[in-house]
Length: 244
Image (cartoon, rainbow, N blue to C red; front, side, top):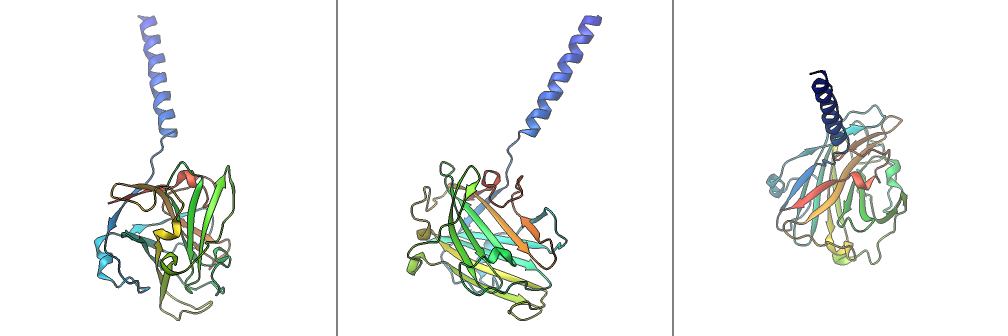
């Protein structure tokens, strides 16, 4: 009887430990189904009725920083590219840079990372500031060693589009506001050379969505899919875009 009880206890402990290890090693990532639409003109304020075809996704605050502004995003795609709409509550446009390809991540910004093929340690990064300044780059990332490359022939049907609008103030450097909106379009032709592009119905990409705000220091960060390392470039913890 005592031997049976001992064996039962050992078995119970093993099962509990097995369940714990399983939960620690779980790889559950957020999945967002991207609705397909016809191409449309972006306005900077999300006024197109096409945006009604999808729902808002809230971003979560991570790391240190005091700002708690609600931040949300919508995503759509067409035959030619992918569309994003950000809504960011704010108190000040903490940004001064006015040239594309500047280090705008050092000021208020929203960001999107797109990793179409997991066989390649290569993803596309796009950033936009409230002043319509943009930073599109291709990022090779091998074992944590990464650096961005600027696009070649960034023109014509390879050119990204961005428009923004502001609430409660003027769209200018360091302006006091109550919020701002960013709307942008990334053409698939800009991503030529990456596998799994353009996406078809049922295609899955790894991706993440971010915001940085500098109203207070240290700066505040928001994320769609939680990263474990203190960097947005933790691409193995990106979520999943599933194209409708």
